[in-house]
Length: 285
Length: 164
Image (cartoon, rainbow over all chains, first blue to last red; front, side, top):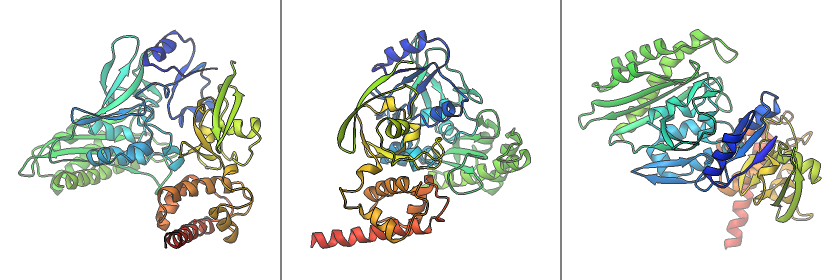
């Protein structure tokens, strides 16, 4: 195995483009090193991107924020503005692993590891986050929901990697929340996750919404029908019931050691309803 | 497999080593530098026995490559006591009998010190959540949590005395 730590994006792309065999990006390493140790993965090349300027930066941009690929969960959670603007994203990222894992694990890594149960992904989707993909061609901006395509697989092409994630400025009177179910309170992987963001007008009617579910399909599911059910309403009880019903219907889970299919379908609705209630409260301020 | 030459700082001392590119920082500490205080429990970031800090940030050294550690400030359990004088947390762990077999203890101490540096007056809930990534299969955690809470109380008292 070769270890490279280039100090520019161009150099990193160059090394990745030329590499034969299996290459992996190293930022926090909390998934990569576990996969290597378990024998699941034997990369021929590791490209550590942490020497590239900007990878640890959280910078304001057009009223939103750009989060570098190597920013850890702990650093993200300690940023007061990011916490205030995107409580759903921050609570999702902070659910990942222990204090030690938070010290290294990154949001971009969570996205690119492409686990169906990745906690940050439904929250990033509902926040309208956009990944900056760099590679041999021009850098492109890709909605986060288009990065993972199947468990462990991404849409990134050879030589490409995600350099940062842009979180666009939240609208006035908007709120977001992420909830997940695990059988205990800490240190586990989502059985179901649900993210909801919504925006209200001055009269308290929902004008915009996004709903995404995690761990109930091969990748996070964007539930447009659920968002449509919220829009135009005051997000009252009947609307929340309908939202839950739509989310349960949209969930396409499997039975596995963490939960049954039937349980996950039910819980997808319950969590979406609860997340929407929290998002509503946050939107009202 | 090309070896990597690394220069870094461990417990305030400049240290140089050569390691394989796929070798963990934990393996470098234990097998190349003879610093066997950090333990390997799971090797997958679940148990916290290998906890160290890098630039003040608590991490599992089993999930860091030795090759990445160049140019950083690493703190391990070997740097916790000041010569023969134990760190207040170490003293408190002894007084509370907050250990049995001792394998998890270095990790708990490093993690607890990191907590108290950030939050000198934690609630029991905060202590328990902060230490959720450190597993102990002997004590049942209560003695460990009490040792940390008591240290925080003592350090606060001493702080007040020093200020007065």
